[in-house]
Length: 505
Image (cartoon, rainbow, N blue to C red; front, side, top):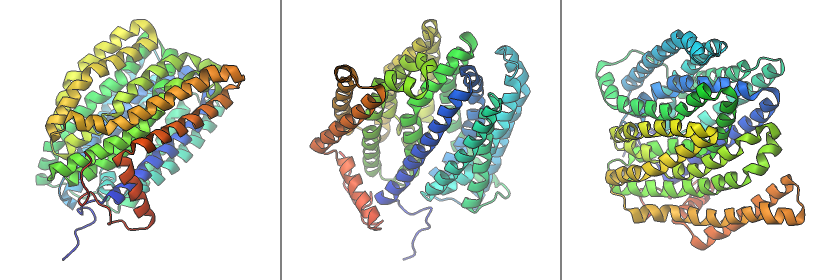
């Protein structure tokens, strides 16, 4: 019997674990590098500089991620991938992303006048070109994702961040202001694109008319959905920047970035791994549901305690790490971290819709939720950046039942199974965060501990309590993952696969 190509073979749990570890480890490495770079830059730049660059984020995301994501996901979702599809996806990406970049460049002047920020025009032009460089690598990234090769993109990303971070720090020290942050993104994106193309071993050729038709039937729903998501994700920045100024926006943007690490960065990277895994099981609903529940359990086991500790420890670690002038972001960070608990339970929802070839379901949800979030931002604005964060979290909580219902209808998921998957993380995080609050509160005062010592002690005690809670509850997803780790260490990569193990129920 001839073995299927590496792009088409059913993935094993151990392969998925190895890929997830690379994705999560890469996110952790990137966060550490970004954190170190940000800590240095917060000493060299003003909050207004961060706020000014935050006004370019929407354009960068629109060009670099929103424009190509539909074609990227279409390549991964296809049961089989041929050269015609890859070439057609690249030309489609170049067309859409290039058009958007040209539009942003044309509108850069009017946008700068709209925000009353003359320097914004040049920043938008440079940011758009940097984002276009990133977009052109997306089809090659899809090729690597189908192979479950996340080690290569991770290593490339780390190299780009090292080069970009060093350049940003040097430019900031020389007085470049917000241009140092734009240079960081440009170096990161250009380095990534060149190295990803080389690693994928593929260069675009001529497009194919039949392949274009299949791609464009799938891609628009994903891309339009992503547009709506980025409207929601960036509307708060734009509203705050326009009404409150770049100073408050700088506080809000950094608070959001700190919250987003465990949800958007680490879990987002893991969700990228689960997409090709779930797509391979789209013809087996029971197995797909089991893989989803296992992924949900693992993501919440990481996100829940991390977000809880961020919310509890923010009053101590923000002034310690960032400096006293960043204290105004503490309450906003705490509110967003609490809202991140809900987001963590939804990280894989969109992956499921795309994996089963029904991306329009996510689009329907986004069409309903985007006006709600926009209204929440406007209502919260009267209470400052804290009000924007609070109303955003409340709107998400109200919309969550609709999101869950749509998911349950798609994969025949029961509420009992869903709650059972997240219960270990919820219970363990509740106990560990309560202990951390005691250490950072009464115990710190009684022992007269400095903030740094209290944070270290609180983190260690909370981690011990969390580990003990998981040992008592023995969540099956964690148990199977630890077994897969053992097989991974022993190089037995086919001994513990999804197709042979019972679903997580």
